[in-house]
Structure formats: structure tokens, C-alpha cells
Length: 382
Ligand SMILES: NC(=O)C1=CN([C@@H]2O[C@H](COP(=O)(O)OP(=O)(O)OC[C@H]3O[C@@H](n4cnc5c(N)ncnc54)[C@H](O)[C@@H]3O)[C@@H](O)[C@H]2O)C=CC1
Ligand SMILES: O=P(O)(O)OC[C@H]1O[C@](O)(CO)[C@@H](O)[C@@H]1O
Image (cartoon, rainbow, N blue to C red; front, side, top):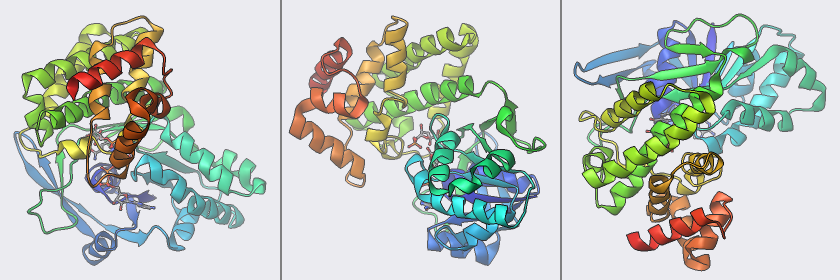
């Protein structure tokens, strides 16, 4: 079996690529970072530091790499059995063109072996979104063939993988937490279901995607935003601040109440899930900057993402949302010189004021009670 994985970054090397290679699948990474590509092709292996009570270094072997903008991609897509991505939601559209060309070539070559494509991004049904981009880029004559032979499989991916410590000189080294969860929608595969240790199959993916995105990611983002406002540099420092922790826990509980209503999760098990996440945020072996976790605030404040979607759920079921409101207000204060979305957020708020800016970014009604609560909280925080 052969796989092509787009994005040899933290989650690519530290999680998805590692699982594929560990399963004995021949793995080629596609990326645009020449330093990483050269190192992968020179060494064909890299170290993964799994940190926890019992730290260990695991070596991923037998890997190679190609430039994601080269024609190699087209050739590979025509021949591999599985394609995965961990590039970031905004990059999916950019890789869709070469994925489409590869699928056309696969069809022209008469390769009817099933191909499955799995986007591993922090987004709801990211693979389905990639599929739409691919179909847009693919001539109509191939669409029926793709529907028959290519599975676009949605997934939920959970492992905290911050960039390696600043002191590391190895561009391939990656540090990961012990916990990991990769859940895929088994109803969307073409051909036999793959047997990859660490990949879990479900026929109820939406519940798992929302449970992860609207608990871990909701809590993580709010930890980052409140943490930055309180002057903390890392997630661990922030979550150990009792004032931050109370709001983060409250927001995860508010979001959890929606998930319990919507998907029928067991309330006690969900409370334990939240507690486990809080301990993961405290992980003393990971240095995870609030700036990384808060990155791209416009995406995180968009209608379907980790702050607004759970809040909309509380409105739907008439449930409390005071902590989520605090989290949204804190997100609007997020600043990062290195993050174009943080700059855009600041200038939108400066131009239009917080009420109109929030309505524009999130799709919430500018005159709603919830926007007015966020704006009051925003001013109180300033
Ligand atoms: N790091 C984490 O703990 C987790 C991240 N995720 C998700 O995984 C995705 C990737 O996140 P990270 O690995 O943290 O980011 P990252 O920035 O470490 O990795 C992204 C990689 O994609 C590459 N890339 C950019 N443009 C590309 C292109 N056109 N073609 C191929 N490669 C390209 C970058 O050079 C980089 O190596 C995101 O959607 C993130 O939300 C999900 C769960 C955990
Ligand atoms: O990768 P994103 O969507 O920018 O958000 C950062 C989040 O992703 C993760 O890296 C992994 O789930 C979390 O650490 C964090 O909640």
C-alpha cells in the first residue's frame, strides 16, 4: 500500500504520517518547505518525541518527500492508495488543482483500484470541502469516474503537536503528547476498509467531529485568548491561572450541554472528557504558545468554528453561554504581529467598531442579545 500525505508539518510528521508509516505503508510527504523536503529525502526517517510520564523517542522510517507544487503530485495521485492532508483549512483549495489533475491521469491510465482521500484538519467535514474544490477543478467528464472509484472520507483528528522547542536544530524532529485520536467516517470509503492501527472507524462521525472541535478546540482557543490577555505566554501557564481556567471549563461545559442535547452523549462521560482535556492543556512536557493556539482568529470566529457554532447551539436549545461570550470577547482582543488575520481583526474593529466587526466576521445578527453581551465583555476586558 502506498500513501501521499500533504503537509509534513507538526500533525503530518507527528501524527498522521507516523501512523501511516508505522502501519507499513510506503509514505511520501508533499510539502512546500524545501528544508523539510531536503531533510526527508536525505535521511528517509525522523524522530518523534512522545512526551509524558514515560518519554520515548520513536523513529519513523522509510519516508520520502516531493514538492507539492511539482508534477510529481499528479503522478503520485495516479498511483497511490490513500491520500491524506494536514496543511491547514485555508490550503485545501490550493492543493485541489493538482489533486484533480492526478485523478484525471489516474482515470486516463485505467487505474480502477480504489483511492481514499482523508483531510485531517481542524474543521467540520474538511474532506467534503476538499472534494468540492477538487470537483470544481476537474473536467466534468471525470466526475462520474471519481464518484465510482474515489472515496472522500471525513475525519476528526486529535493530538496536541506544538512546534519543536526553539533549541532544536533538527527540522524534522517533532514533539507530541501521548494522547491521540483519529476517527474516520467508514461509510465514505471505496473498497476494503483499511486496517491502520490508530485509525478508528465510525458511522457517526459528526458526533465525534463536533465533540472534539467544540470541546478541546473551544477550550484551547479560549485558554489562548484569555491567557494572552492575562499576560501568559503558554497554554500551561494560562490554564493554571484559576480565573482563566474557570471560564475555559465553563465554556466547555456550555458547549458540552449543546453536544449532549444534540448527540445524546452521556453527561458523566462528557464531564470526564472535559477534565481529561484540562489535564492535557496542563501537560508539563509540552511548550505550547498561546500565539500558536490562538492563530488565525478570523477563522476561529467564523460561523461554523469552535466559538460561534457552540454559542449558536446554546441559542438553539436556550442554554447558558456566559463563558462562551467571554471567550469570544477575548478572541477579539487577540494580537499577533506574525498573524495576518490578527492584523485584519484589529483593523476591522478599529474601522467598524466591535459590534459591526463581530457581526461581519461571525455572521451573528449585529442587534442580537449575544452580540451585545460580547461587546460589553469586550469593553470590560479592555
Ligand atoms: N498541531 C496540532 O496539534 C494539530 C493540528 N491539527 C490540524 O492539522 C493541520 C495542520 O496543522 P499543523 O501540523 O499544526 O500545521 P503546520 O504549520 O505545522 O503544518 C502545515 C504544513 O503544511 C505545509 N504546507 C503549506 N502549504 C502547503 C501546500 N500547498 N502543499 C503542501 N504542504 C503545504 C507547511 O509547509 C507545513 O509543513 C491544521 O488544519 C490543524 O488545524 C489538528 C489537530 C492537531
Ligand atoms: O490548528 P488550529 O485549528 O489553528 O487550532 C489550534 C488547535 O489545533 C490543535 O493544534 C490540535 O487540535 C490544538 O492544539 C488547538 O486547539
